[in-house]
Length: 185
Image (cartoon, rainbow, N blue to C red; front, side, top):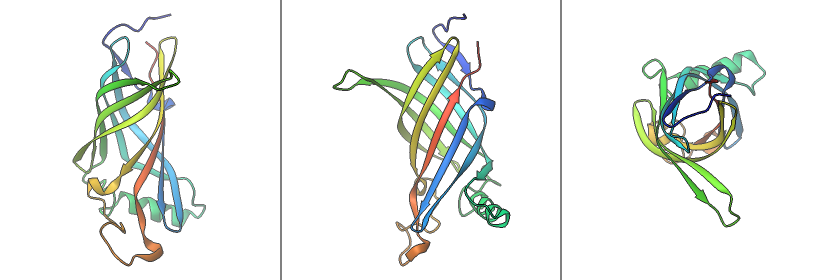
């Protein structure tokens, strides 16, 4: 067994990591996947002290539409200037600034990541919970993040910016569910 020592750089195993998304609108929701381009985290022996995860925005994939025509239409629209504008911004980045642990009243340790998220060239700090586990020299992280798309200039059919959308309104928050693992040391 290889020990993970202080200030080790652990590389994300992009083949064995999953990013799922859910976007909601008044009349329902759509869901799909997104690929990672690469990523790493810095482990100081007790917690994550830094790192960077790069998302391949050109890989947006819809999973819930059965019609190939409607699936392609939605994927193309999500990649267009109305949404993630992948021609100009093919990657989104999560730059990890810090990791903190809190202990709740039942003595359970809760992990939170503090990071800068950059989408469409716009950066905002986000804080999100995650569960971390380890098996030998491989680390696993799982969690869910709700992201307000309007902070990144994605205003298409947002009730915050447009009135009288009726059932065409798309909610501002979308959800990312992730399951990441590092490569073995």
